[in-house]
Image (cartoon, rainbow, N blue to C red; front, side, top):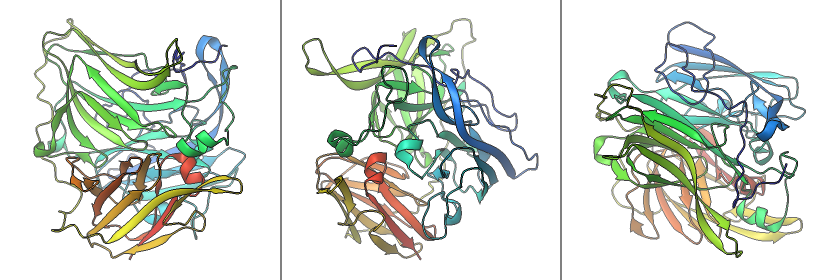
Length: 469
């Protein structure tokens, strides 16, 4: 099979191109990724079983390759809960190396965070571990390993997790759709390419030559009713690719982000969205007036016939009017949900600076936070419940999607200028040579990781620890 490039972009279908499946009846229907079965019928408790293992997955033209999967699919099954539920997930490791599951974005007990540090172990091959925690916040989250993440996530080990909001906060929509976005690097034989340690990968992370939507090739069809409105949940699970998404002939309102749905004063109309690695977006989507077709494109850099670097729009979601459906009466997102983050403090004095940079080590590039590289990590402290203002200063050219475990924060400014990036977040993109200021109330006690979510950067040392005490 000929190797795809970002110019021709031969796109593949992973995990059997899962159809739009409705989840267990106890949850509102979410389309896009098949839902796992809740193994505990009791109210207030959800229980799931995940097995990390190898699966032969069919690629384009009948080609098959080895992937690492949860329950045989990539992405893994959709896990669901309601705010306040106890979630219990037993993870069995059928791989030949240790793994964990990190619950990206959830403010849960630190012992269940899925990292390997101190007394928090990995799951050994052939062993199982049961994660159990209470989910305090509604929103769209995801799960993935936190051991050799640059290898294990690229191999296919990740999946979505939704915590449903209260009934009165749920948007009135014709469909609730989940789109898990990823890229993957495959070689001429259709296999996952080897993990290079060359300088460009160390500097910028690993970008793929195949774009995926819900483990499929991105040629995703959506049919919408006349005057219809849908809720779209977007998740960026790539190793390093910041997703630039453009909407054509669609009316799109941004209604939430990492921390779930926003109050009405935060919402705004958009025609383009930048989605950093690890981040999520909540959108309200309609066809534009008089349009019978629209689309969501991803904007990528490609080489034209003359060898010049140009922007290329790759269609990922094809939206079409379905005249056979009745005219919709859905009203969309009209609620004013409570924000999951305490109000920001007055003033903007910096409580703690975090400086991102790199140096050339013996074996290649080393990425640091405040001149320290994992496992000799920089450690800092925050008092429980105290609003802190954190300065994220990037002294290098490559960008960094900064992710804070176990907490949420607001984005205050970029290069000294206030920004309109509303809502609670756990991931923020810090551009090359840029300074971003965030505020967090550090509401969740424990020793937490704070790191770049370009997985190669984290592997090369760009992880720190914050003790909330």
